[in-house]
Length: 347
Ligand code: NAP
Ligand code: ZN
Image 1: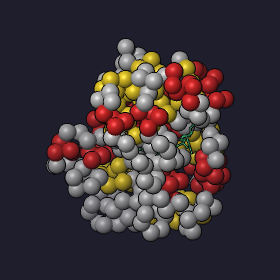
Image 2: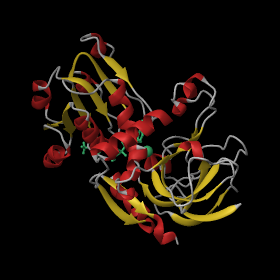
Image 3: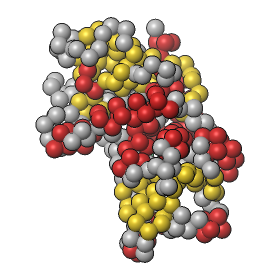
Image 4: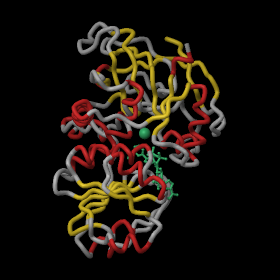
């Protein structure tokens, strides 16, 4: 076993404790990564609050960049010192229809989550990237493109790919009108990606004072989601809405904003029951959809696109010892637009 250090919620609170973490010795196709930067995702907060069920909280963190420090004998994609990026899954069966389609994230045997999962070979629980070292199969690490800042690129690996896949699936591009509901970690990258794809982008936000930011990110407009008049005037306007809202909310007002055959993709995890009126889909032949992060092919494609267009997250970088403070501020909506932890304070 290799022992490293990380930050963990040991009591369901955001007062994270510094803990030792056991990482496995490298298998033939494993790499060891010194974690340099790890983003703070709202899913980490949901997990710490017990919103996904399951007892206890693993070490969280599933969007990180780092440096290869060791390679197993069968590794051929990476060498010592390479900069890599890792996202929300670290293994899958490789054989099922989903894996064959490049959607390892939907592996029928269950993709191995970066934290809170179970290793397919030795059955040990996975622990996330709020830690100084991670060990994984090389197949699930990605070369970090030159030119992308490694701290600001870390959020691409969850927030970025979670926006990329539904944008691509819906054919977002020139002539298409895309709205992003909730301007947070996911949402701000959704705006940047959709705009770079050539779509006309609008932000739907409960926070009017994000309007200048929305425009700077590439949106043409921000509609205040609590203003019934503004929503009424935007009725039928969008081909695609990416709903990244982290709290329970009524889908009906969002469905009302869709054009004929438009799609509402609910990619936030608004924990709890969400009522749905089928008639809201009927009138306008509308689609309700969702998706979860992305597969290897889409992730590689997204990273190449971000490199080409110079897209990274707008971040606030904090020493990892402030992870708890970052989570508390995220809970209050006090983030513009992603916290990233610098793990170098773990030695
Ligand atoms: P975030 O940075 O906290 O952003 C969420 C945004 O939602 C906030 O900035 C806010 O935007 C809006 N919001 C929050 N509470 C709200 C409320 N009560 N009513 C209306 N709007 C509210 O979170 P994130 O990291 O982007 O994650 C967003 C959600 O996606 C979380 O539920 C997370 O678990 C989920 N997620 C899903 C996947 C996936 O694979 N599907 C991947 C990652 C994360 P405004 O101030 O602009 O309104
Ligand atoms: Zn995430």
